[in-house]
Length: 392
Ligand SMILES: *Cc1c(COP(=O)(O)O)cnc(C)c1O
Image 1 (tube, rainbow, N blue to C red):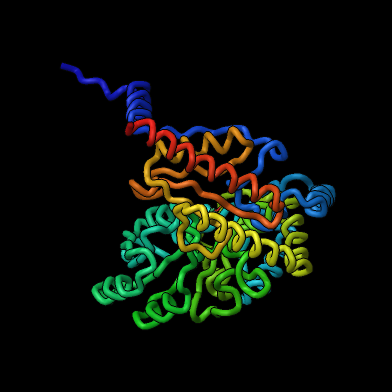
Image 2 (tube, rainbow, N blue to C red):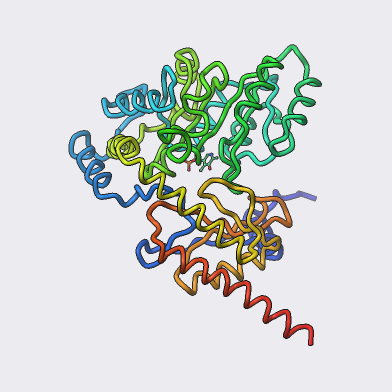
């Protein structure tokens, strides 16, 4: 009998059926900025709609064109990219920085260029998907340590073979939990075991530190954190990412990071807008102060309502509701009131820990926050009513 290879259409249909049956179907919705109050995005400083960034983006395009037209190593590396790399290196107190098109690619490229099948990679359990994917791209196996457990990391490092280089990898601010990594602790455990430390500060940059330099910044130099990644599409309101470190690290990435070498440089207008965002970051510390006030106010009010807050000092304020259907129900009720929040389920977070991912911004007004808190109180009251009806 001649066997035929499996049919693609049947395979796709089966995967779709399984995902729907598990209640995990993902859907995109149209967001109309202005029509909804956005508590789902990562525009922590309210820069994404700032007129002077928009002007800077248009000016950048007028000056250099809408696209970079080539990769950095061919003819796409423009003066505006170079200027941005210098400013970013300065912000985080590193000798050099290298611009990538996205944070996902910065992590892929860095891990792929640093690691191979022998490298010992140690990752926090809750690290961003791009960090795990980067190690996989390099053919390196990632050992996962318990979230924020220096003791578990120490134990894994102590047991690792000594004939291969070691890399410890962590988020700076955990994207679904909002807690901040213990950089000093991680740096000290890493140093004790001769490992390099790589920190992805996607959500810390622009928000944390004296001047918005993030949770690593100048407080921890290249000796403590040799590999630092920051992204520009969150607090800085534009797009792209960078890796910062020593001259040798950056040259190594230029030589070997395939996600750097084989892609078109980011549009110059985006780089120009990011330069303008860095100007605002330096000139308007009140944005970060306003954000802190919002965080404190939200946490106090949510605690007063008895909502399941996590221990997060950052603008990421998840409410862990446990079950995916419950999260979708709350998010739908909030959407009816014109409030967008993230409904995060597995596999993005572990099973049983589905959550509303609420993010705060300096751009939110007191009225925005009041609307959110009222709606959350209504969700809670609605569940109470439903429970009373169910148990006569
Ligand atoms: C968002 C995010 C990224 C990816 O950055 P993009 O620029 O959106 O590709 C990487 N790491 C972490 C921790 C993130 O939250």
